[in-house]
Amino acid sequence: MTGPPAHAPEYSERLTVPWWSWPLLLGAAALLAAEIGLGAPGARTWAPYAVLLPLTAGALWWAGRIRVAVTGGELRVDDARLPARFVADAIPLDVTGRREVLGVGADPRAFVVQRPWIPGAVQVLLDDPADPTPYWVVSSRRPDQLAAALLAARDAVRTG
Image (cartoon, rainbow, N blue to C red; front, side, top):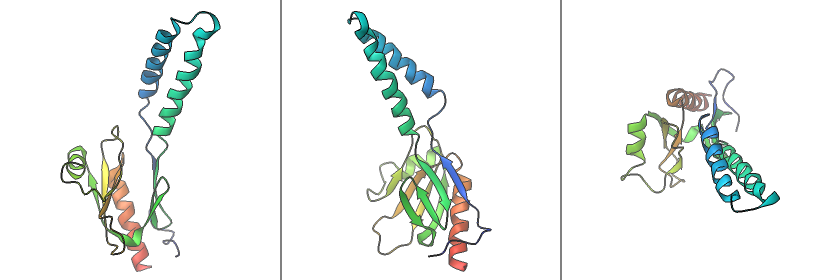
């Protein structure tokens, strides 16, 4: 398969955790390490810091590692790929719309990459008879731009 023409819009973002969560959670980890370290004399006092602070930093990095991109005629969400030719529609969602799509009536076969600290999302309706997945829901800070880029990539693949 060849990619879309060079004029097709591309989109990319990383679903990082908010900046304020780093000092907040690292501070909580330091406080927990201090509590644990109170009962250990000598050099063992620092062991909780040596374990908890790197673990917390690693967990924050891991939680914000997901990349969302529309490039080369496909939607890429971390290591998942969706060719644009299978996109029936892309619907930008605000907080309320995301809650409805992921709420009680959600389809358990849907592919969901949702980050609670990101208010927006895009619901991608699929048109692939061989795939039982009815739709994807992907968190996005700029759902309008992601949906527009995905629909433009779909149109470019279908016409080119």
